[in-house]
Length: 210
Ligand SMILES: [Fe+2]
Image 1 (cartoon, protein in one colour):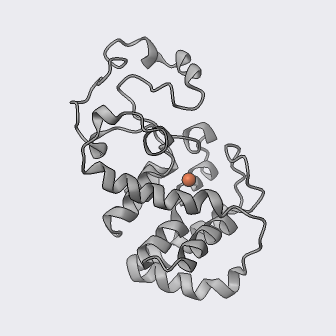
Image 2 (cartoon, rainbow, N blue to C red):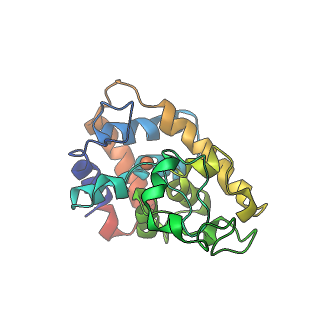
């Protein structure tokens, strides 16, 4: 499936975790990308905006929404109380595993963001699909945009490195567009399509581009 086909396919999905979105998914992707473009950001930044939620197509292949959408968080160490619905972890078998519930768990202190195993979701899935094709900041935006406990709440600092702040700053820069571009304004999909097809071809090999 090409990127554009995936965008059209995703249109069938209604994300139950999204509180402020009556829009079809393709509109949200285009609104995010257009807001980034209007601010004169680099082309890879616009592309990250366009595709960041494409991993949600997992839901359309039968994955339950709880394992695809919603916030992500590190597994294998103590759950931060800043994770949304923290109390629900009591029903997770890891809650009763002392090793997994210690401060650092399966990790070394300061091991860095890349070494953390995050809960599965649309971010992680799409990251693995596109990791060979996009620059590091775009990959950070895609991989960590739902990891609110880290990029918004500042949790898990003891597992991060100083260098992670650079990537997290990109994620925060991206997040402003993701949250604040959700409006009811209609996007002219057919008018915008040529620009975005060009952008997709610039970064992705033919098999993904068309
Ligand atoms: Fe997302």
